Image 1 (tube, one colour):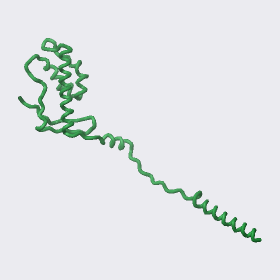
Image 2 (cartoon, rainbow, N blue to C red; image 1 turned 135 degrees about the vertical axis):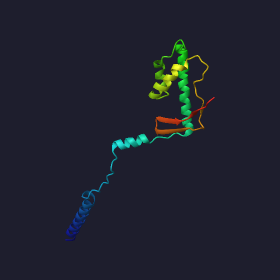
Image 3 (tube, helix red, strand yellow; image 1 turned 30 degrees about the vertical axis):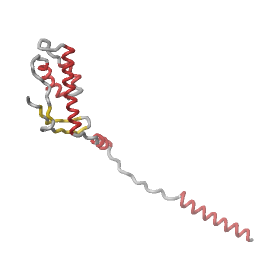
Image 4 (cartoon, one colour; image 1 turned 180 degrees about the vertical axis):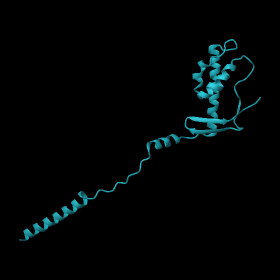
Length: 157
């Protein structure tokens, strides 16, 4: 009889343990998942576009000088290559693609086109400006690949 009592009690203990284990681990209520609201993709892309490293004034001045030097280097090389002078006027369409590496289309098609018409005049005029960066120099940077320098003064000699 004792053996039967031990077997019945053991069965209840095992059954109770199984039931508790089943209730705790298997049939447990799923945990609530916290959903993080997603930002619209275009807003994320806009933030990525707006997040760029802004340049300091020294870096902007260096870039500006590099572009000015590049523009006048294009003029010099083209003049030698094509033999442009008073008798053989410049053909702007030949240098425009090279100038677009240093200037916007609108600046190239207006200001630099006028400069090209006068640059090879064989006269005693310096067309390259000497820039004084310490007087009225300012710049704007709203994009990583765009700088605006609305104020800088060429030195008057």
